[in-house]
Image (cartoon, rainbow, N blue to C red; front, side, top):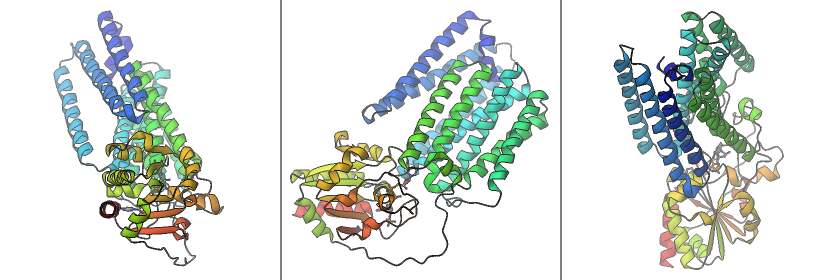
Length: 477
Ligand code: NAP
């Protein structure tokens, strides 16, 4: 209800308020756009987050001022404002605490939760707008669209959170007629949406929000954990779209513009991630990638192990070492030790470069963030296209907790589920050292022939411990 007070229609009755809030919203939007622009480079990303956060704060304060002046005749105004402040404080406390406590490796599920809340809020705004039934039909259609998209995004993101947190199985869960059930739920949502617009009763509107909530959860069931980051990014784009629809329904430009920015950037990110895995969005959503295949005993192949001292000696006398970080480096929080290793090698005149795969780790930019946290200079980080031609000239490709992103099956084996995915061509280096705890597979759940090559040597153990031991061994040389 209070949000509907923000509509330009009401504000038009008070030109000073209208111009003041429009100016403040305009500045907030500028801060969002500039903030997002800055986030595109690691060097300015932190500043970008602050700018966008400032924009958000300005938008929230403006909304409160707006509501305060427009709601003067409402006897419950202070109660409503107080409740809103209380909710904001609770949300801020939870967000602040979790951002401090949640490890970097669990960041995707946290993003899923936060994004889901945005979708849920967008759905509730549309739901209330339909329930109170004012405004022309065209705007109600947009509110109904916000309910369908926002509620699907909310429950879908919660499903993604549960899978990534492993509170439910992260494997694809499929059953016969699954797509038909989902299609029927979607059609049912449209029919109930129509009924909620044509004759909005509490029953209609309540049932209307329930169906897309169910659809979101069921949509995530057949999607495997490895694909979850792409799905989260897709839900993020949908949340943006739902917010933009709400903006149209309430004629609030801030919601329209911020929703569109989130929708567009989420869509781009989804496309880029899908491309980096050489998968179509259709395949990700409906392909049940990562489902356990039954049958076919695998032969136990041999991985050769090397001692830390031998590995340190070879690294110390190398001309060029390319380090390939992956999810295991994040899980072990080994980035600071990796920096020490880089410094020890550079002291001995070794050229050290980092090869960054776009989907290494569990979210886009995962490796860049961790290496930046350890103060590893950006100019040592190379993208896939730039570093691949250099592996041939590297004495050692040192793989730290990476697996799928260096799996040559993507180039060698047409039958592999990851065939065609661009990989870091570590197999072309003169020697390959791989740090991992054991024979564990990557997130795609498939074997990696790189680990059995003649030139590959394993350094088994937790990445932080192994890299730390390498540094100590180098210091003794
Ligand atoms: P990965 O394929 O998941 O492999 C990680 C490896 O690290 C595992 O083989 C594991 O082997 C090892 N490991 C785990 N914990 C370790 C520890 N504490 N110390 C040492 N090693 C450890 O990782 P990746 O090569 O980075 O590939 C990322 C995967 O996620 C890809 O399949 C990608 O498609 C998928 N994905 C990523 C994104 C994204 O945005 N980044 C999005 C969607 C999907 P052990 O168990 O033997 O130690």
